[in-house]
Image 1 (cartoon, rainbow, N blue to C red):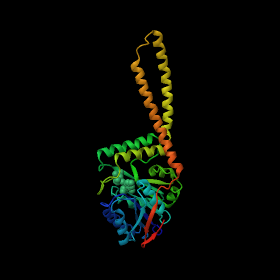
Image 2: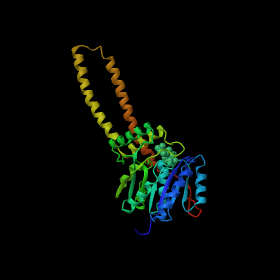
Image 3: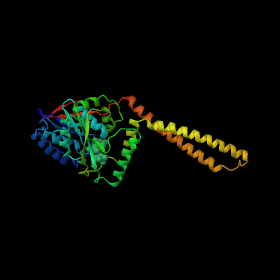
Image 4: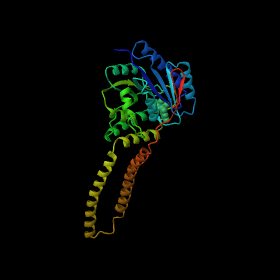
Length: 325
Ligand code: UDP
Ligand code: MG
């Protein structure tokens, strides 16, 4: 191996004051090991992205940067932009100053010891290394089953996602540069990165329980995330509507013949219940289909506005230099 390359970590943080110190401590120890074993350059940094937290998160990040600028950097976003946007903000800010970058959540659910393996895989020529959970014992039954259903459903719906991989991954500089060409506003990184391609591999790790603090993903946010994932990556739901429409049309021909025969046979009075059922069923189906179409129109609306996906208020890097963005 030639001289070690620069590894940046991007860690999105939203109200993570309970866990941040611990995360920083563990990452610092890991970096010290990696640097001394010659795997990564001593110019490598850990970048905490403050996603508009309302607690002390940014103060903590500033403090970490002030006390150990050789390890910690910080990005302060102007407002809460969401997990995916916070990761992207980090990646786009550091893509030109590092050789590889690992994204990881702040809550220590992802195993820090996997980083060594990811970096080794990078040196073997992989441009993307996906961290894949081998066990989900730490998650609640509810989270486990909804997550499993989510991946299955995503695949059936035609979005190519890596099973049990969230946003713990290594990307090379090249891949980050390519990612910057994806202009979409509805971000779903775990669907976008596989689209970029290049040589890639998976490493397996056990997912732990959140070290402290609470999950920022409520059921509502998780559902929104799943809907976003599907509608951003596939038009299959629209095709399903067409298919459904065809089936309904065929069924109505049969129904028409049935009604006609019933009329000829002279039983014209009965049929209130079947009429009511049809009205409800068809009304429901139509509303459902309109809803799906609306979902896509909403997406188009958001995309055509071309709003910035995040706004970097401050980037603290290296020797206390503050670069205004
Ligand atoms: N997060 C963020 N912005 C948000 C919500 C979450 O940057 O609006 C961060 C959060 O601080 C954490 C990561 O995204 O580092 C994943 O969130 P969380 O652990 O709450 O999700 P879960 O693991 O429960 O799915
Ligand atoms: Mg978490």
